[in-house]
Image (cartoon, rainbow, N blue to C red; front, side, top):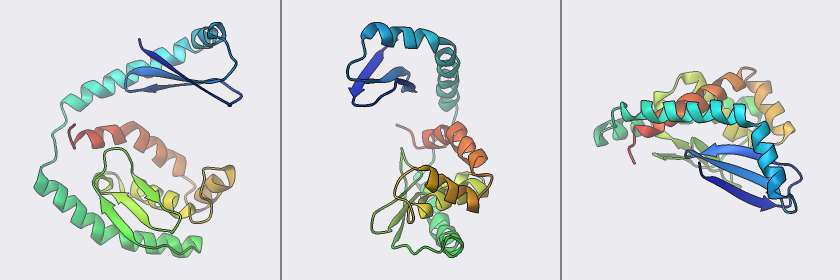
Length: 183
């Protein structure tokens, strides 16, 4: 298995699975021996998540691709629904926002610019409504905290106490939704 090591000024080791290979983030001065020992300690976690990634790749093969007509329909539906949901949650959070853009993206569910412009993925129309709301609240909370700090997540959870369940759903099912776009 391919292992990519990225060294930086960080203080701790971490490992993630990305596109079927291991990505290790390591402090600048840590030895390869220590990295190997760390990976051995995490082997059970690695095996479990690699198996999940492989299963997800297999599941993607059977997913029907969206047609251009279906994509246009999703964009239209998102343009109709999302602005109302954004306005609703912006009032609850007490924040303003700029332009709302709907895109068909392969990697992101939403984003918030420093100017307050919001972008959302039209594929969110294929997710449960509470998952859509969780992405909207997440992006609107960036109007208060342009980071993913504890204060940011505290604000998200204040509005959506079940946020972690929706986030988990999106992490589990999102790649299958994105696969409907094809390569």
